[in-house]
Length: 550
Ligand SMILES: CC(=O)N[C@H]1[C@@H](OP(=O)(O)O)O[C@H](CO)[C@@H](O)[C@@H]1O
Ligand SMILES: [Mg+2]
Image (cartoon, rainbow, N blue to C red; front, top):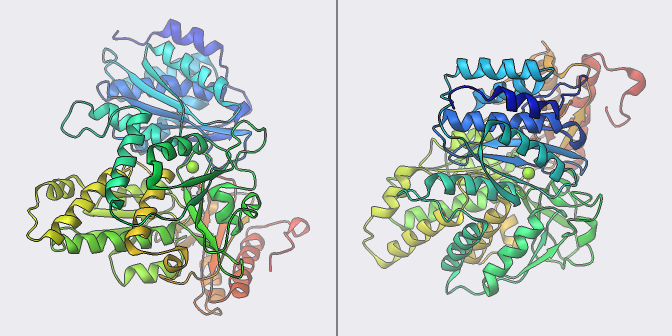
């Protein structure tokens, strides 16, 4: 086939008309909106995924149907590139153009333009693997996606209902099958096997940890965690909560990693189960984010977020690299965003190189690739560790000179297998945290004591046009609207350990304000003052000004 199968595309496209009143955008999280509004988008993404595969000589592309931590009626779709990483940025624009073509003819025309512009060889094969989370809108949307795949004659593989990180794993495993870089068996069982066997090696000979409570957000992570638990056997006892994947309205409702992080409190459903000192964690709706927490002896809630995970893990890897005698050769670095707690940045910067990049996993992932070992975590619990190909080769070749070096080296190699290096992965990260806690003999409290979080507050401000907000310095400073940053600076100066910044959200039609300060009341006051300033300075209606804004 060296031309587009226009007839088939037309015929299928007529079954998935684009609603006239909607405009779509492929943003940080792919396309994401109400599940009911996504039929045409899914169909077109199917065709696009096929073209992306042809452009890459038939290497397999992934498609994940999920809206992560969003409410149950939402849904979305993201593409996964051949090494399991997120879609190359330039194709986000192509996706947006195709999704917005007003009708079948305009869609076909846009496809023809794309094929010409990118010199896509249509005679190449197209291969796609796809999966969805547990949302009720998922099956119909996958049906629309399949029509897109059929229209282009794509060799498609349905990975069923699974987590986002497992789909990323599958993409990489399929594309490396039979090569020297083989990532693992290309099945969910292969993933479970790889993680659980690395975990067992890493904790061999150590005392067993007390059971871990896992809040599965009533999402797809519940099924994956149950399977993983069987693979782990006695090596780690998981007690799963919020596993009601078929209960209407339960997904992400008053539970899950996003709830815990944004509300800074315990999911009410765990209150009767979590004992003081016991560690627990929450996954989000597609199991790519992880937040830990515990109650102290006064039953006060404490959160161990992405920053705490980064600190725990990075320090452990640095120590292993030293113990293996590789500190001169392997450089460990950290990547954070402006949302990282100032306490964590201070702790980490005293020990390691730290870089701050704009919000969004793709920025963190790319920056982490510049280190030999790059640890990246968003404060919200999304993150992983990347070992560069050169580093992995060094670990494989290095000749240890003592038994202690040999042990450390083996641990590092096992970590490269335990960690899902394609994308942040709640289950893989959970095992990673558990390994470090066992090796350090830490409970939740000792881990939490690595550094003290500065109290902080995140506030949303609804503005007429968030596109007027432009930032610099990894989103930490506003350059537009003019003059606003100077007013923010003036406020921040009044607070001890004060820090605040304002940026437009990439996923919601709001501007976000973040503030932190030495004490809770001050962090809140600073956040609400800055929010009030933003609201007033951009023409917010005094009649609808939120009462908490100062
Ligand atoms: C403050 C915050 O948590 N922002 C989130 C959120 O982005 P916004 O651009 O802030 O809407 O969604 C992104 C995608 O899930 C995630 O990468 C990011 O960390
Ligand atoms: Mg998610």
